[in-house]
Amino acid sequence: ELNQYILQPEYSSSASLVIDGELKAANQNYFIFVFDNINDSDLYNENVLNIDELLSKIFNNMIHSISVSLDEWNIIKNDFNSKKKQYQYIEETEDDVKFLTNDKEEQNNIEKSFDDLVEYN
Image 1 (tube, helix red, strand yellow):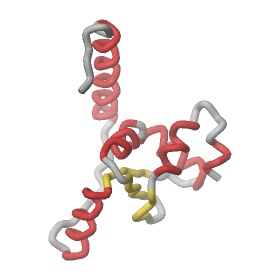
Image 2 (image 1 turned 180 degrees about the horizontal axis):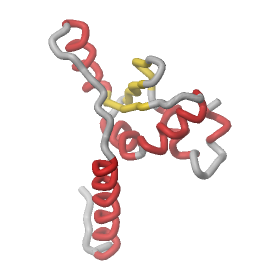
Image 3 (image 1 turned 90 degrees about the horizontal axis):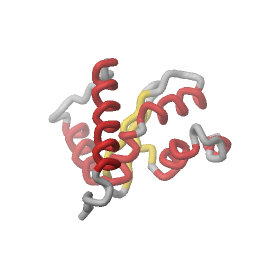
């Protein structure tokens, strides 16, 4: 079903990210996707609100998801299996979402202002 959304501008990047990840854990409302590298995982998490909207639409149910790198997944899996640590989903508040959104917008504004001076290593 995700392939239907690849051509829709509103969801194309989100659908691509979900397809590129590997679903490692899920229940009725929560998904954990794993990526081979941290950059893809970070990109997923930066777009998680749109991705969750897409997944909720597909499954006709409220879905919350996260992404971790393969290295992080191995640590989580070992902790969970050994019962050393308990994991709990904590939903972000509206203030958290506003803060994260504003921070990204501020960063984009800074990059635009100093476009010729910003150098990435």
